[in-house]
Amino acid sequence: MNILVTGSAGFIGSHLTSRLLNDGHAVIGVDNYISGQRANTKRFFDHPRFRFVEADVSLGMPDTHESLDYVLHFASPASPPHYQQHPIETLMVGAQGTQNALELARRHDAKFLLASTSEVYGDPNVHPQPESYWGHVNPNGIRSCYDEAKRYAEAITMAYHRYHGLDTRIVRIFNTYGPRMRHDDGRVVTNFVHQALAGEPLTVYGDGQQTRSFQFVDDLIEGVTRLMSVRHHEPVNIGNPDEYTVLEFAQIIRDLIDPSLDIIHRPMPQDDPRQRRPDITLAKSLLNWEPRVTLREGLARTIEGFREDRRLLESSDRR
Ligand code: NAD
Ligand code: UDP
Image (cartoon, rainbow, N blue to C red; front, side, top):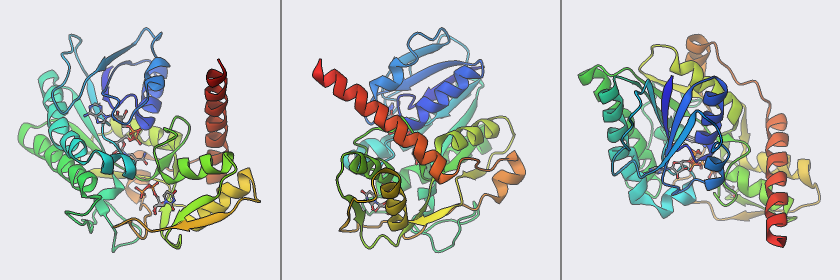
């Protein structure tokens, strides 16, 4: 297939591009680097089936002379520090960017898949979260630029499906981690691993009793590619139901890297969800999918990837 991936220079977009190229597809990557990394584009430069266009998808989609079979819309800042630093751009890429991507799919009679998020559940009152839960979101708090953009993105995707008959999919992604995350993205996995590798204390926000469920990126990509090939238009949760408090998570990473490190506490950010865990009953029955990579295995692979990046950075600093 000819597949256009928005956000191809991001963490997930680059893993998705790798997988699609390995599966024999041709990929057109589009990114404006607002939160992505040029290194994630460079790794595909020599690939004969990869083409890259630097563009802001909120302003319009690039002209593609090739026919398109699928549009995968993954562009959006995703880490809380990034989207809070760029709230308008985040709202725009969820709103105008999603419509531009939907229109492109419509023009090409292509299928469309939206990367949505567990953030549509907000600070949930139902636990674990099934797709049928409508969520508990502060519509004007500091996270609303992301949460509400994604809720709008889901709504317009369903409207294109119902009104125009577009063949759409929506994946609700839960916290995902792995190699190729940007080192300064401020998310919990990046912060803890980098702090531990640098011999610094790990910064737990609040008392650390809030929970998250962490999914290794390979499991997510497997779920997304399975969803691409079934006809199901309602949202599907893809996440790992293994739930940890943030404090437990800090202890696991510290013990993997250097058990002598301190764990310190910092103020809890506003509207930080107290708990988060996917109900993956639907993904199991629809896609025959469930996560395979354990937290310790996924963290070991992530830590190795981050160590390698640090080595490359240090050697380029010396040159
Ligand atoms: P990321 O920030 O690493 O990647 C997003 C990419 O989109 C970046 O390369 C960025 O430059 C690009 N982008 C943003 N706005 C753009 C625009 N207007 N035009 C072109 N490119 C633009 O984030 P990620 O973790 O890889 O997330 C990818 C997608 O998955 C996002 O849509 C995010 O909402 C969703 N998601 C991620 C997670 C997670 O845990 N990583 C969880 C839920 C949902
Ligand atoms: N967090 C933390 N220390 C950090 C970064 C994050 O304790 O250095 C917490 C954060 O408050 C949240 C959880 O870890 O409760 C996950 O944060 P992240 O930004 O990775 O993603 P979120 O799920 O909040 O979007």
